[in-house]
Length: 173
Image 1 (cartoon, rainbow, N blue to C red):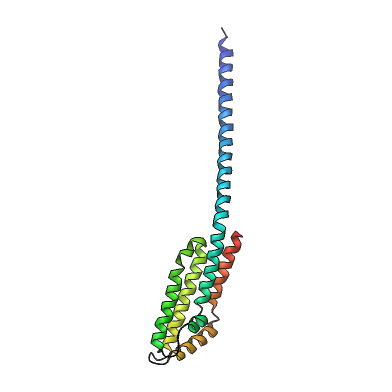
Image 2 (image 1 turned 60 degrees about the horizontal axis):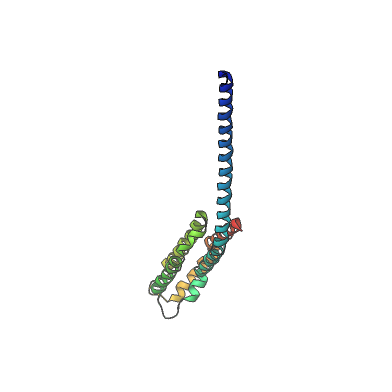
């Protein structure tokens, strides 16, 4: 039979060995979990990257389409009153935005806020231009007033939103 001191030393050595093995196994498992998570993230990025690029492209197209000048040029200005044209322009902005609202999933919150701000500013520009003409006047007058306001403001909200989309994309690629 072993003396009690040897038995205690043997027992302490066994406990220390088991504890060391447990620590090493926990670290190895943690490392493997991080490696698997990283590989999963890489695979997800490969799948999401084309969707993100497409979303950014579509956002820029939307912003260009709701820019005041192209927006007015796409509408039938002749034969409509300023009131009718204003309604058509605001409807076109709203529909364009609603059609692309799901794209916010692929961009940062800051970028999406800039896109919303650009939409709101463009809508406001149309409304302000409408206050400067008579409702029954020709649509051409409203169109001309929109062109003047856009030239005066420099269309900065749309430009800022496009820059935000490009910057957002640049962060990921």
